[in-house]
Image (cartoon, rainbow, N blue to C red; front, top):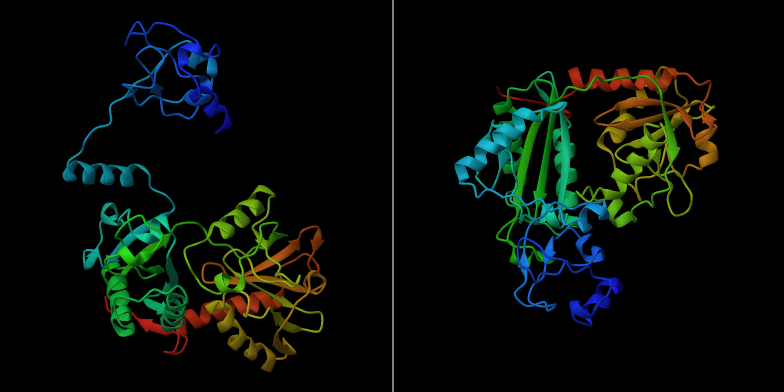
Length: 400
């Protein structure tokens, strides 16, 4: 603000840095200095160098100061839309900007029902989930008409909600029933069910004290991106890891996660691995990490400082089958050093979106022999089999 204050302490007519010229608005008008016009507000000032009778015009911002100094302005009109016109534009936007994910159904406690129109799948702008990040979420996979690990994910979102001081608008059984009915309305047999608990809409304050009531949203979608089990590369993240209180809460505050993922992609990697404050291996941006030691032991970091992944926890159970078959010597959860991780015979990422993905290289270190490992593949097969024909504990049928 230092440059701005220079121009505010004396009239424009006395400031030699401000060019004076005529315009189509008034023969006495003066142009605001480039330092202020670069803010993009398009201010113009009138009446002999004073700030009185200021008129504001929306103007496109120019990065080239020569264009600003030449007095070339572009004005535009912002239409005032009726609700029906706004809805039509929402529909047009959805039709013209289709991504790789197809949205099939959404439940919103705001309108108390389910819609299958993607244009209506919106959230109030004053919902504190939007402008404060005060919300938690979770995701359950849909496989062959069954919700996989629905109850495990539901338990976790309720734990996260308690840690975020969000009182759910419904009891657990009602939330569960809403999720199943939303999946049913979507007609989706293979996809994902993502859902959120928020403190709700009300205002733009920091405190949720002005919010009307907590909100619940759920969306069923299909991802059209091709899946792959080919090995990938990871790097060590330079983005600071979230403190344990926030890392163990699955909230929508994912900026560190996003920046970590972007950092990896910028360096030609799939993901970046976080280390905790003691230098031990923690987790990826939205997945857990596991290793197979040279002694054929499945090794996974503690969940005390990171998110307790539902897929990772299920892998710990399924891996016992590989122990009984002699493919693994044991399963262990504990502190894992970077040296241990990089010297492992196999490394993998675990998550509901990727299942079990082999890691072939971490930074400059090749993992094992640089090929997809047999244990990682075996665990992937066990997860898929579990999703297709596992016990009722992990598979909930969807009544279409």
